[in-house]
Length: 309
Ligand SMILES: NC(=O)CC[C@H](N)C(=O)O
Image (tube, rainbow, N blue to C red):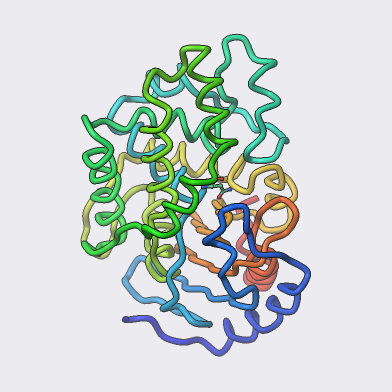
């Protein structure tokens, strides 16, 4: 793996790790409960192809909510922004990621944004293909392109574990189906969504995806455009306004880097025009974000003036 270990990053990881004990690994998806709350790793990918890292960056984790920003990019490419935003909104909610509350207050029942579960389920519903396998394959090949690694796949154990317990997400789909926002079989969509959330990689790969967003959709090393500039811009904007769930405002003030987190403890960051960041730290704060991961980003942003604001 062409990624240099960095003493400076290692210091920051050690500092940030101290707050991991205040967090808790997610266990509402039982398979995620096996993670080690003390883990913390980071990789930073630069456009020229070089990379620096600290911690055990070989360790794989599932994308969970980080996959929402990638599936959004895919459906925007497939269906166009007008079609997508007729079905899912653009506004932050201020509610937890899995909340059903706001849906009932909206007429029509259109989820407020694609980063909360209700909105992400609508986005996954829009992935084209005739079967779950075909649709998952389309998403996986896009992700393989972003990472530049054809072996990226999903973790069957985590997918199955979420499939067996995803009753709140089923409730969201039933609600959206009743209101005709979704018109497919509930179990089919849950199957696809849980496999999407279980797509796994290490933080080196995740930093590469962050880099493509940071560079407006271009893989600079290969001199290849992976997504249109406008779509990269829309995704980064959502990362700023809703990427850290209902902690996005505080995160924008303290860190100021477009980022997306997931309940496995991953965070993907895209520092516009500069580099991509991949972090894995499974101990979560109360809002479901990696507690040490956020601390690490705060330290990085402060020490190297990375805030975009
Ligand atoms: N916040 C998250 O990462 C949520 C993703 C998870 N698969 C869920 O739907 O509950």
